[in-house]
Length: 411
Image (spheres, rainbow, N blue to C red):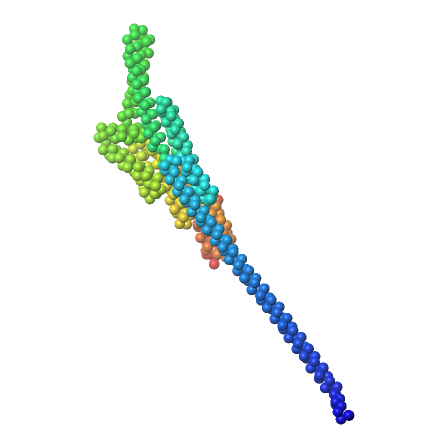
């Protein structure tokens, strides 16, 4: 039996076996740790992927929102353009109420558009002219010609350039002035007849009074005839046909040609103004303005209308320049428009907007003058193109430009 007993293991063997067991345990533990780390890494990777996917989805949603916002803004602009065209068509047909309603709807869609605000101002001015025409027509029908002339003269002070009602108001004023002239001539002739009768009176005092009355009547008749027979007076009153007749009688060929040329230029400029075509309107109206000064001394019924139409066209040229980012040229056109027509609302609004933009350019130039002196100098130069020389922004821009040049020269 002893031969069948297992041999006893030595301590070294037993220690080796324990070491093998410990190594196996450690191996198992290491394997478990690897699995845990791998699982954690996989979970982290999946979480990272999910976060990245979420961020991509957020970016896509944000882009979709921005695209939708742009599309919505584009849609609003398109709707506003359609409404503005409807307002312009109604305006040309003298349906001012319909034009005003279309314009209010367009402004509700794009309240920041300066051209719509200018149109609104224009419609308000035209409604005043329409009201003045109605009142003057009513007074004319009642034979109150003095009131007609007064109403239209007051309206002319606020009449916008190229007004729809300008020609009708001028015709009505000329008609009333002709009626008043006839009435004054009839009154003066009647006074002369009364004076002649009173001169037959035997009393010296009555004869002396009759002589004074006759002299007064003759002076009145002479003055009225001079007004009627003076081509310049007829021209300034808008009576171009009468002016031509008188010039033909006087055989003043050059002045007659000047009147014909004036009428042609004025009509051409007026039509181009109504069609918003400055390339044709500005040359024609400039020639009409020159001829108006030569013929009537710049005191005719056309003088103010020509200046205001020119102001409108200068403002339109400024808008064209602004759309092409030619800011200096745009500002120059807007200022010219205000010299011609100080109440030109579009130019006033655009110059205010340009000044705000120039202020932002100046602030940007101040921030960039150290790191990017060349860009800062270009911005300061742009400010000088836009604002006038006595403006505070122009003085600051000039100082900044000088500082940039000094820094360049020192480097």
